[in-house]
Amino acid sequence: MVYKYCENRNFEDFASGRVLLHRTGYPNFPVRLAQEIFCRCMECIGSPEQICIYDPCCGGGYLLTVLGFLNYGRIESIAASDISAEAVELARENLSLLCREGLGRRIEQLGRLRDLHGKSSSLEALESAENLLGIVTGAARGIEREVFQADILSPGALEGRDFKVDMVFTDVPYGNLVEWQAGQDDALCLLDRLLPVIKDTSVVAVCSDKRQKFRSDYFRRVEKQAVGKRLFQIFVPA
Image (cartoon, rainbow, N blue to C red; front, side, top):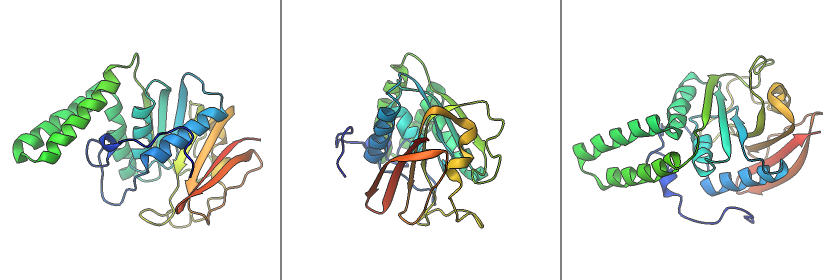
């Protein structure tokens, strides 16, 4: 993998379970790879000043939260959905860290843990939280967030939603920690299900394992690359 945009630097502030919340069974995503794919997608759509980004398989919201912090001035709004009510709840908690109030509550919680246990990990987490707070407070405006429960593979899953997205970025289930729910092992229809929220200029990045196929008459693939066990593909409207 040749990284064109994201340098290899320290991303420990985004470690799962440090400031961002983690629960057993929810996968993370490599931070540098996420930012690299994000930048490649931005290049596809001409690097607009502000975008709306959506993840239809958001899990605990880790991917979107990290991208929100890394691109705070470039993301105007975030939409996230998942078939699991538990995942939606966790995603809502993580994405709340992108606002002063939500991150402030997390800092108070980490402070209580430090005072209670006196562990170095709590102090390190507080330092990371203060670094993230600097991103939020230094921005001219916040990021709007919408989190909802939806089965993206079901017909009409996004019908009636009042947002249009510039970028879809999702890491779909592929069996290591998370699998498609029963009867959902065929993800061929994923791209078509996104059509209600897609604009003519939108870009879609899908990460999966190498066996899953995504086809649509309404999209064309502009990039495909394997990174270890992952395969990421970038699509634009045909």
